[in-house]
Image (cartoon, rainbow, N blue to C red):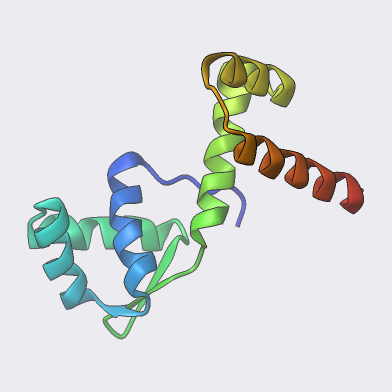
Length: 121
């Protein structure tokens, strides 16, 4: 798959798919009505669009997620950093950390993640 793009409303729908996959499309209609207030036609339109883009598969009325939540989050993060921070992770983190106060536990966790990344190189 080249580029993963899931729009806001689709992401909310994908939350339902990820939580229930594999799931019958008729059940997705019920869940989308309950959680998103969608009509049946809206749900089937979104299923078709996501299927056309290779995000989900609708086979024999059963819907399967073809991409994981983490893949979508990673793609969206990269797009955001490219768009607003000229692709600079350093600028992104600097901007974020100047605004947010991290706990000691969060700082330790970030250090651990950075160390893991360094070890992978």
